[in-house]
Length: 173
Length: 214
Image 1 (spheres, each protein chain N blue to C red):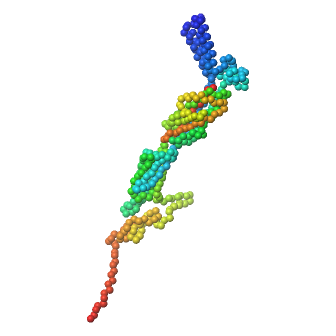
Image 2: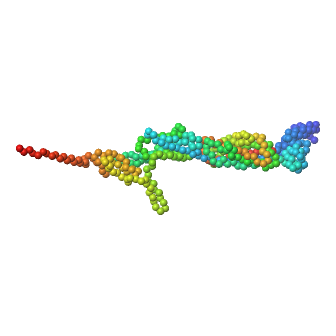
Image 3: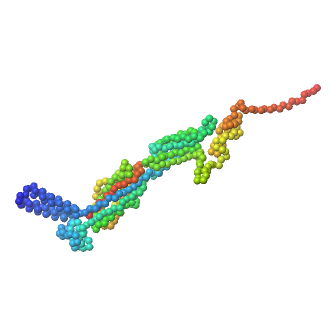
């Protein structure tokens, strides 16, 4: 039985090491906050080197609201990049991913709706149709802010109403 | 110390799962939800009206894309004149129509029309529109705080007055004398005179030669 426990413990240690290594961290230096460093590699996973000190990576994403103002059915608005959300990374490290998804458009009269895919967003040279489910892009947002343009195509015959759509931005770092 | 085989196997796996969770938790995520808003307007529409060969016709269009709006209800109102008991009367007729192919509408009309108006009241998908043709016969009264002003066109006669003009009965309509009918025996009191009341005097003067006397 002791032999069995020993084998299990050894396997556990090996696996734990592998997990840290796969995550890109530096298992050799188990640095914590404020530990002296020169580069990120000197810090443990989840930490970044800032001013020669390891600090916890942060990437607090905020985004500004969108207002498409008025639109006539059968037309598209925002294709010229004039309508955008400013996504700000208030953290200390670029994001490793930027994911965007949304809900369907719903009017003040709930009977009036528009599919979520009527909205598209622009990033790095391409338009992406907004989806109701998680859209992993892998795009990086550096600390600071980035404008992400949106366009909306309203189908012909769409009922007159004021519509709202919730768009969620999620960044990983 | 007795530890069963099952526990010995499960414990390391549980510990591993905890480690993995911690590892991923270190990789933080941040999310922010925003609300996008838009107000969808009714597209403005336009409609036109014309008259040709006894038909009023026109087209209802969406101004946003220039396409005709089909199956839309439109109302045609026509002001026309018609004789009734020898009098010329101004009447109004309305027709509820529906646009057809490519937004076109039409209506046959056989009376002497003066004014016609086509209206689309608008619906959830298109704004209202109207157009008119001809001159509406009406008297417009403008009320001010101190006085009432009646605005009329310069006219040569009093409205609905009759006159007999060289055996032609005429009525005053919209400030002008309009021919009603010819009266062979003249006219009076808004009507043609019947033959019995007409007297014709013929005088013949014959100059006889003087009697010859032998």
